[in-house]
Length: 250
Image (tube, rainbow, N blue to C red; front, side, top):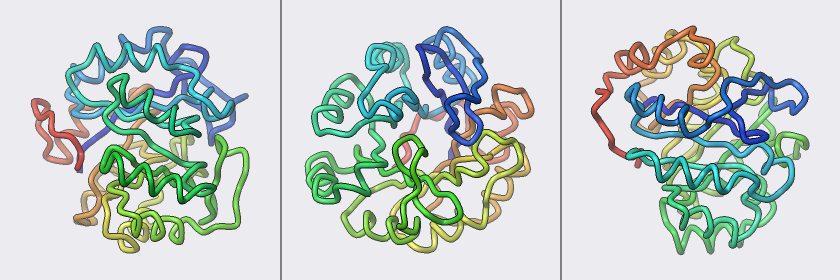
């Protein structure tokens, strides 16, 4: 399991939201490229980018910033948020993004998802954001009637290589990660799972590592790093990951 620092983009800046609420944001930096370099220099082997404006608008809103980050780093980046068409996906992959994360579209258009997986393989990941076990879409504004585990099993059967699983009730709240939920997700699928949401302390990462779940390939950490409650060095030590490693999560 590797540690994946997160950068959430809104209005061209690095922010964090509480439970995905657009009106409840904290701005951490005005220069996303410099922040990306900071996490690479701190030992991050992979970077997680979210286009929050894109998620709310239904189309990429930070394409230039994302491209600049991909160009500036030697480590790979993944991107989610607002990738609602094949053109959006192709544009971001061509811009240097290692893999894109589809959420709303994975639920609403499984045939399109299957076609993209057939074409791009592991470069198509699926983000499953859930509250009380049910999938949320469109920037977490809407909650569906589909259970997260059900969607996970469906996309796993399509050949999706990686699922990014987020418990939205814990995201940005600094109250701990839903370890049991992540374990249930790992046990339900055969693909890789990346844990996200509420990873707020060294104890959370240690608890994830203690699962010894072979399908758990990464943990995304955002607010805890920005608030300084934990450092990359501490997290890397907990996972046994060496700062010099640059292996992509596969």
